[in-house]
Length: 534
Image (tube, rainbow, N blue to C red; front, side, top):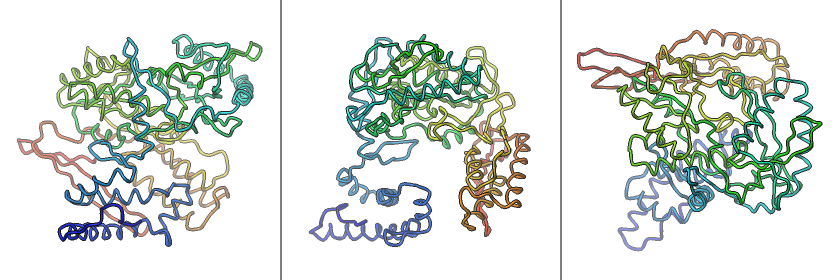
């Protein structure tokens, strides 16, 4: 990557001096970056590993540019700003940090602003943001019918699943979220559908997912044609850190968040499905009317509607909660004043209701009469399943939860010893299902990561059965995970009414691993001291 183009050619002495200063800083930081990323001719081990794992590396230049800009002084920053537009990059704020946006992401934002409106009840009506024309879609009916028949065969083997599936579809119809139709224009798109069963859900055990990635006969799917949009949901790590700061906590989620947003009538024929209550019944065609779970732009469209409510809100505190304390449909907020928190919750719920986003499943760590808690255990793997994580959604081997009554964090273990042979793929899959965003279990999880590191060094194939001693070591790790369910970690890390807070960080390393641990130390007016792992 060259510096040419970032600054104009300078002519006078002052401009030459400014350019030379810029170049010195620029190339010094590029040298550091190349130690990490390597160069095009000699990529580093890190970059080669990313390519082997399928990570996109074509935009590393943009990343390096951003690393440079974040380290430069104000005068050089102004020079960068002057020429940033020439590189096709936009910016937005996210949790106080500047996030670089691509041209496509900016186009998606502009599409939302131009095409979004509200109905008389305040409900948002959006358009699917397309990067390519839907006329490129081929036949999708045949595949949708074939997959419906396959689905019916699977459901015939489980009466319970079949009943839940039918109940889900019936609810969809009764709420007006889809309508039966008899004819449809071109272009149109039929989405196959399948179910995801979540036995730990307190509301919806079975969720129907619509597969908008299914290819039509033109080798294009509905998702292929959509702009995904920038990731504008709150930062999960930042939300969980703030979750540990306040004495009083409130959690809730938005009921059926995606389906509270309507798709413009002109685009609904791109969301067709086939359905019948049983294989002997006549085949029926339905058109989905709302933002659909399984479409590429659904997370952006629904979260962007929330952000719009925040932008239009005049209450600074409610604006902050909607902008920073939501991860997709989950809200986690707090305050050191119990009464103030309840008022904030009520005001936030009122603002969201103006956009037809009802809050439900309230959880507090204290008793109250205005918004009584409906649950005592809150799963902290926030957001809709499959959003920002994996799709289709996976179950977690180990998940972080909050016990509201005792105000403690704990880990729910769902360990299942693999019934198949132990391979490197099985081990990596298990590690990826451990949800520990705060890193509190790092000393325990590190053992299996070191095991995986050994397998990388041995160049073991992904699906080759591992030696018995390695498999036994992995099984011992899984069996020991159950013990972690006994852990109880205080959620609140700050002392109430403290006058001083200190962050202490300890680090260490060995040949096999390195780590860091952060503690918050607070001091009160009367001299009492409290420490908590952060």
